[in-house]
Length: 186
Image (cartoon, rainbow, N blue to C red):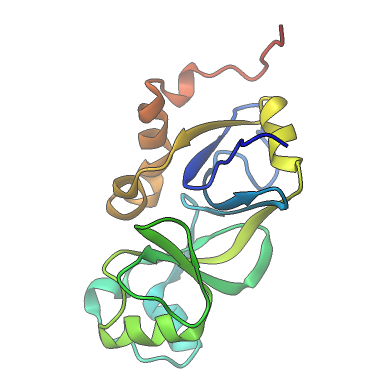
């Protein structure tokens, strides 16, 4: 296998992917290595807010600025499990360091800290994740299923979910409407 690594990149679903879970999605890749890839869809909000989720899991949320934040559908795998993408101010019980600025945590302690106002400054909360087996993501990219671009924290944490796909496309200098469904191979 080559040194092809998409950790800390966005995957932009190509228009040919009109049906199925990933249609119209922007996915952030948290880990990509010889064993496969793990990512979070970052532009598909649920009708569930953080306040509602915290209430369901019996964690007090004393942060009014976080209460209305939407929980996202992170992917089709383990949709009952929470994933928190955040800055790396602190490590938690179950944290995957993505790089020196971002991490992914799945343990309840980060949610408790968020509720108390002691959590990271920048967070996205998802239910579920997206996963690819060894070589699967590379194959899908070769089949023109995805565009890739290095990720940008501003897009992840500062923009509303509905603006993230367009902003990622702008990093490539194109708009989504410019893309065609089918691409040829030389």
